[in-house]
Amino acid sequence: MHLPPGYTIHIGFPSVAAYCALRTTCGLFAINEDQARLAHIGSWHGVYITYKEPAHPPLPTPPLSAATAQGTIVAMGRIVGDGGWYFNIADIAVHPVHQKRGLGGAVMQALLSEIKHRAPPEAVVMLVANKYGAPLYRKKGFLDVAEAWGGVGMGMRMM
Image 1: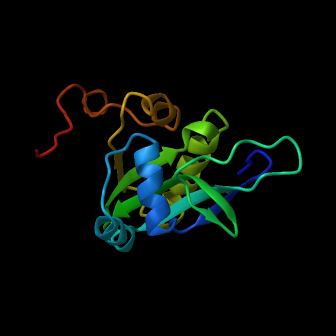
Image 2: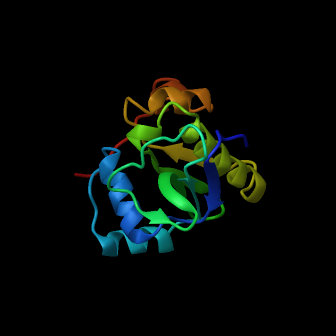
């Protein structure tokens, strides 16, 4: 997977603080640190991307992100699943300063590759998208549930 200079993809999860900060910076709803810890524990797989300023040309360090020895955490995603049949892609987030560089696609590709490698071929892979992420997900092969099921399916959420 090719990333621009200064970016590195890692298997695992950002720190709880970085996870919470990146969610809110990227427009996902805020969660508390206990929820973040449980989200990591309950996940099947995760990846995140760090940015370490190369010699030339530098990008600004994003505010509200956690810097680590590996660099500043600027993107993430995870898979929630039962390991046998259902897999839900969640928390795809790329810091606004670092968008339009292929990072969201790299996160998606890493997650989908892990599913292809470890899950059964018939596995059901789902996600809930906002309108901004939909083009990326369509490019990766996802369809609206109604489209995928011939107009008889729909996604639902309990409120």
